[in-house]
Length: 226
Length: 219
Image 1 (cartoon, rainbow over the protein chains, first blue to last red):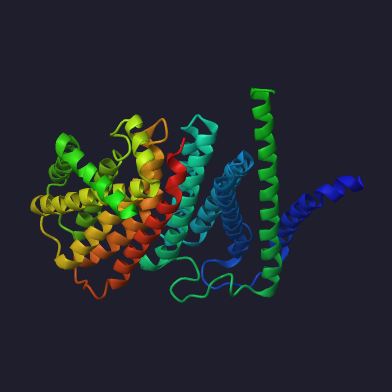
Image 2 (cartoon, rainbow over the protein chains, first blue to last red):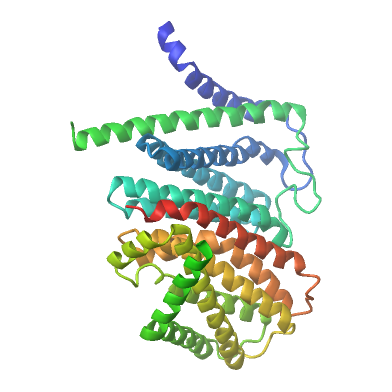
């Protein structure tokens, strides 16, 4: 039992942090935000957290791709694709929670907003990455070419997300056009939930990646046992 | 060394083009037909926003079509030969330069046909044409790299479009911002920051391709 805990304490920590963020997220007193946000500010603990987790997973995928290109070790390629898969999962959850929130506060699930467009393009780019991988049969070639696209697309996406708000006339999201950013003006109790939630989802993201890597290894072994 | 390799490779591409001719004629005809189809279906464009979007959508698809041939029109054995005599950096840079020249001709022709059929909306021509040329360069460089990636797959043409849209989106949106200014009261000085942003985007794409392309071609 102690051995199990020693090896897996971080998974338990991740689950506990998420449980804490869900329970506390619904129970704590939130400041009375002006306008039409009101109690829906609690979605911050779920929606915004998803984007942090997604970017960390995509960042991990980028690092693994770079390491693959420098070592040509297939292990890194496996981690690159599985991190991208988990990142996409978080991204889709982020879009769903965001659409729900937008429907409540702005009256429509999708608006022409730089943040929304940036998110949509990011998700499209990683779906393209998955399609690219499917279309190459030979394993080493697939790993190499997918890694090149991963690096290329990630850098262009960072540039895109960076310049997009400057091109748009304004954003409905807080933090644009001089309005105070939500995260900077968070009061102390909300921070106590928000930061642990980010940590919890990132830990669970890494756990999910590990499980998917193991699954892929087993599947490969079943396909041709040697 | 690198410069002379690039020079020979670009000259090779141009000579090949003049010998075969179908590639450039095909793509010019494609642009003219697309514009004619939109002329017939739109009949009369009255606002500059529609004009602007339609122009750039046509340019985007023409660019994807024009550049997608870069790495597949020659046989694999001949490509193997190039790789033995030239460095991979020279190959990707020469393709970018050639595609830029192609896109430059294409975009100016597109502008000419588009204004004559869809009406003249451009107010500030120097601004619009500098955006057009920077955009051609951006499309050419980003799409050349994507063409190199998709030429290594089984499903080249469909993938070309899927892979390129996320990557050219920053260039396309910046271009549309500048050109919509050129259709109204925008000035060169007022839009200088966007033009500089386009130059920076091009620099990023070229630097990335220079570093990443050597990983693509070896088998």
